[in-house]
Image (cartoon, rainbow, N blue to C red; front, side):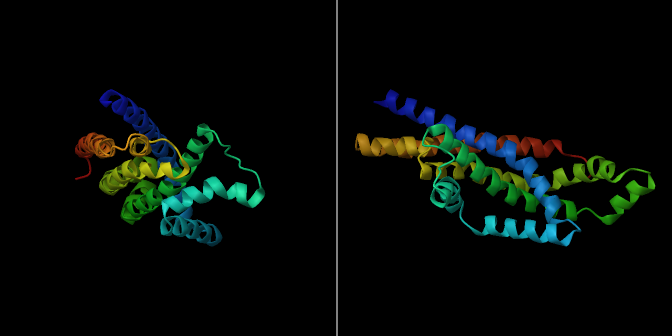
Length: 218
């Protein structure tokens, strides 16, 4: 029984890791692009992007998962995701990437706007272009400033992966719940907490080490 439980939970945990990894892979760069939109000097673009971020950050991720997966089928009569696990997993990634990119965009925006205007002026005096100023001067300082708040969101993402079970994606919590229904035992569900604690612990250590390496611009 123990071996069966560990095998099932390990399979679900791998799916949890996949959701976590691919969400970061998509949300980190997309969040930066969205932050540029929210800071745009073109008012219509800034208004649209800011409104979109407000909607995503103001509604639950669970609701967004349901809307993204079931919405197309209910509105257009065609479930673009299909009924297979691959489609459900793709819908989860789309929902998670959109959600977390909006949260990351606000962190990026706060970091970029915290850089003194003198840094930009110094770059211009040196004859650097706007892109060179951003990537060689501003971005290095922004990264150092956003690591702590970004780390908090990344830890939250680990725990939010459990919401994937809302549309029947078999992550670790879903795997643990199966034993309640099939065998009438609850301890596998509590064991999932150990997996999360270990995962969060490893990520926390990595984030702290990364933060220590950013010892420039003190």
